[in-house]
Image (cartoon, rainbow, N blue to C red):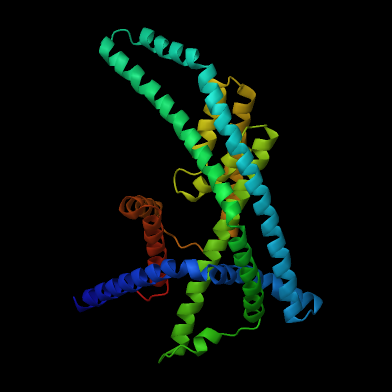
Length: 351
């Protein structure tokens, strides 16, 4: 009984500390964003910098400068291309959706009339209610598409107005990344040397294992998701699927979700091309590419994800659902990280 109470006290303490840290972190993120990003980037650049130092006998400062400049050049190029492609496809999507619905209104109406023939045994009032509901849904989809498109365009315009602020953020992030990377390549438990504890070996083990699990897990899955995005973009570009960039981004996001996965994009898209577009070649091509991407993911994921936290998919789904219901996107992140950190601390026998 005492052991249960002690464990319960630890869980309550963990929840309180985690909640306070989460709230303080996100409240202060607006002011500390360049330095948070810089620290994350420096963790990514640590090994490439150490490799340059060991292979080419380059000084620590020069190696850090090289990796930082190359990294930021690639990031800025990819962001520029991504924003330009995303904006272009969003505008095309909005225009084409409106044109399709206006040009095919008679076909949509005839489709509902054909439904009436198949289900003529139903009460006419029920048929009318179904037709009105479906027509209303089509109108709502059209309006929603236009709303999303306009929001994306407005977001890009708003983004352009923030260029001076963004330039400042990029500059401070770049400089901080350089200094963080330079320090990390020679740091030997500097943080732990300033942490008071009666058992430094235990503290060092907890810190090292927690950092290893979190960093490896995050970077590994980021790499898996990036591969999914590139594969999807490549396949859709070859098959000449419209809005390849937008669909690839959505597929990468869906790849994070357990159970659903990229099938939530590939399968509906294949059905649209088969039954609406009547393009059977593209439809079967999407399904074949879906199998290829899935097989590649199943092969690469165990090799890339070297430090799996072993979180059950239902726990992830529950944290997403509960978080969204409680406080939207911020609530979702709160619940997800709560599950992740609890699993980490449990793995290192803190809880």
